[in-house]
Amino acid sequence: MKADQSLDCMGLYCPMPIVKTAQKIKELKTGQVLEVVADDIGIKADMPAWTEATGHEFLGAEEAGGEIKVYVKKTHD
Image 1 (cartoon, one colour):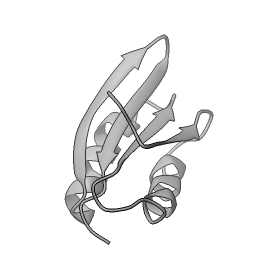
Image 2 (cartoon, one colour):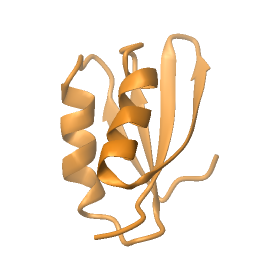
Image 3 (tube, rainbow, N blue to C red):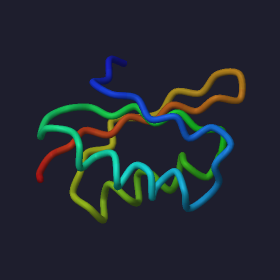
Image 4 (cartoon, rainbow, N blue to C red):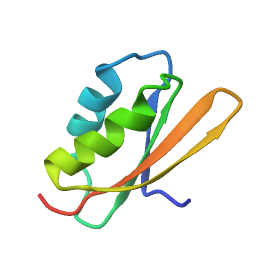
C-alpha cells in the first residue's frame, strides 16, 4: 500500500505506537495516508480501535518477518 509518510515504531510497545501515531497524524493533510511500522503485535487491535475512537480511517495491516505495517488515512483536522 502506498503511504504519504512512514512512522517507525519498531521496538516500542503499547501505548507508544498509538501515542506516536496521534502526534504524527497532526502533521499530515486530510486525505493523506500514514504507514506505521511496528513489531508489537498489539498494534493490530490497538490501531483499529484508535481510528474508530478518533474518526480516522484504518486501511489495513500487512505482516512479514516480524514487522507489522498498519495504514491510517487522516480524515479530518
